[in-house]
Length: 580
Image (cartoon, rainbow, N blue to C red; front, side, top):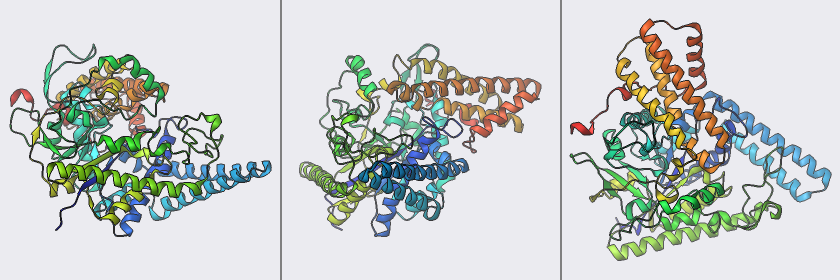
């Protein structure tokens, strides 16, 4: 078989915090509805188109466990049908308004939106059978793509206060994947690509304990649970400038970063390492199966991430920010990267197809150039790994799913670059070089800045004691066969998972939904404290009061996630570093 010029994979990271039962608009359930309508269904359909044409997408699709729980929930299916119906009605009302005003172009756009949401409704109810996870599962079974897992609720693993907390996040991620996809996961998306090696770690805020304690490297938890690979940002591999992926979208984050940039100096660049090879990562001194790491390619990354000079900033594309209320439909184009909302001009859908094709060809040519230069220099094919938030395609960039389809189709037609998922690449090209990595993430500055700063450090002062309490409860009662005790411990674990979600610190830092994030974190903290108190009372008295029973039932009904949660994950740390 002729050796390819190189390999390529899109890695799409799909995640939202748990929102069912926790608000609707502007923050809450409509986040999930928007993501499903604007990103998940259009992308799933693009992959189905490729599969129907006999083409493998070669996509590595990450679906976080908490997102999978929401997409599988009956409440989502009901809410989503109602959401689509509301959008159709909004488009019809806009048509009537534009007709009265003589706005013929906007009237046509409103009709476009009605047809668009009717087609989404048909796809969801008829072709997808209201089962988005089932579609992803069938695409994986046909070999079109690979689905990978992540931490239970997207906990920011390097900052979690105890190894038992990291262990539980990883084990729940593996267990939920098995339940939803009927197989063992091979890949793992580290939340925010955040990694920490093994070393004596001390809590960065007061209240997390005293003194430094030897902590396991993040890759150790993946190795122990049979996972083969994860994704890192290029600066963790090579050093140099960390190009954060969020600053273009959140202006508050840019202003915050300007205040703290001097605290995060660049690490000298290591020219010997390359983002176009996979490496094995190990930070444990004992022999333990290393886990492969794929590195984000910075050259192609900015071409898609940047709203200023990347493809999404094309003036012909639909503008994300300007919406017509009350329906929230969008009728204006980007116009230019510097145009404010008042200067946005009307959107013309017929103009974008050609731009998508041109930019898809440009992207493919860029990847081929990178791989050709790498092969010329190293004498072996490399891989370009292109990780993005799934919601970039469709939600932030309306035309993104079509662009992605055009890219993958163009690769297939060209034939020089082989599309692979993470596991497929490792099967064909097993890495042999074992390296160590520093601590960091794909956030601004390359470290933990977004998730630990003066605006959100207070959150960790509540998370750390809760993690310690969960560990103590599990050690004392995880082996107790009493079904009520097991229900209490499991709900404590679920609530702790929700408290640990990295979304709360992110939303506080970006000001995108700060009040909502703060309220959610405080609520989950208060719920955990009350559940832990009830658990200790029950351990003494072996009886629940009526009010305590009602509170447990309320939490179980509202936060009905992870039926396979196991309190033993917090009771005993597997392979503790002190003993090996």
